[in-house]
Amino acid sequence: MRVTIFDYGAGNLHSLAKAIETAGVEVRVEEDPTAATDTDALVLPGVGAFGAASGRLAPGREPMRKAIVDGLPTLGICLGMQLLFEGSDEGAGAGLGVIAGRVSRLDAERVPQIGWNAVESPDDPLFDAAPLSIAYYANSFVCRPVDSSSVIAWSTHEGDRFPAAVRAGTAVGVQFHPEKSSAAGVRWLHAFLDAARLAGRSR
Amino acid sequence: MIAIPAVDLRDGACVQLVGGSYAKERVRLSNPMDVVRSWEHYGFHRLHLVDLDAATGRGSNLSLIRDMLADANVPVQVGGGVRSDERVEELLASGAAQVIVGTRALEDRDWLAELAQRHSGQIIVACDVRERRVTTRGWAHTLPVDILDVVEELNELPLGGLLVTAVHKEGQLRGTDLPLMEDVAENSQFPVYASGGVTSMDDLRALEHRGIAGAVIGMALYTGAMDPVVVAGEFGG
Image 1 (cartoon, each protein chain N blue to C red):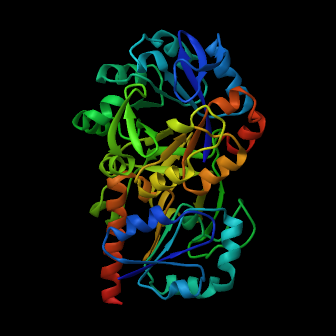
Image 2: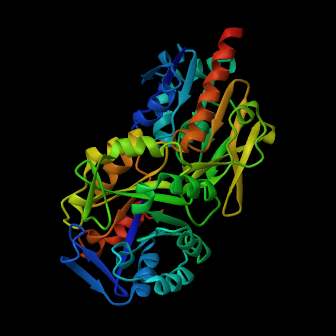
Image 3: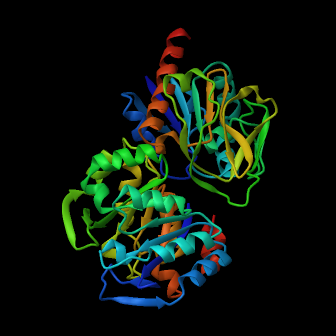
């Protein structure tokens, strides 16, 4: 199986690439948003800021949106999750709009939240396959879906309850960093890849 | 990434050592409680508190640490000579957000595994590194172990993080060991905190770019080499 990490050019992707490679899959880092969709699974990584990432996404936004809506298994991590939404208060530009809603700042005194926090009320086969009760977060902004039925896990920072994970079809977004959430986090990441492999067979 | 001021305690005072050497004390502030309030005032939202006396078996600043934890308004990670369950429980009960364990954690992996499982996300392992080798016991004793081998072993545990101190860079105001920090961040499945030699905003930006979760800053903040207002403005969290 081929896994592609879409590179917004904002930071180091080695840690994520290594965590994916340990699942025994082929990993490619791709800067072109259209070319990035020629893959069996797409990963939108969690480094950088919304405005800049949206700019890099813009030339291939529509093909990528269509590929995801048509069933390309996609995992958005942190900023990558936020790009699944329509837009963000963090910066200008459009997200993919796969999930209705916007991204706004955590309603908290301490931002970014950097550290371990809970993964509450998980309700998705991925969390059945690889249970995860806490995970590592590093974010100032969170997703606010219009319809909370897309939310498959929650978390809370200083009283602000926000989606820890969302799903729309075969696209999953997580606000936490599974690749930095110890062995349990990496197992969860591998559970996503397993599901992507199965989805690919039935496509 | 966030910047975390270091508050190192020795004989009840807040000090800074050069290169981790007890003979080379460069900064001494007699009231650590005021130091904590001052960092909070500048806008830092996380603090790093270490009992140097406990780390080297010279003594203990525990009662002072309890008072400081009770007084602090931001999450504090506390370490230095933490070698028993009792001390871990005591520090967490006193209000420490995370407890940093060093020597025993590295020499007794069963103890660390049990501790990390019991306090998921709250245990930070400190690795003092000289070049690429892990050192323990207050920097006096060097274990012939490569830091990346240690990272590999620790990846299985639900750690709050790994604090990597580049001892050979510490307190010298000559920058951090970027290749070391990059390698550790790339290979670890937990957040990495970097310490030792952070001297400029460029150091901080470079560490952030390499995926470091937090940078502990000591000497540069205490000597004025870095302006705390500027540091907290960009990295205060």
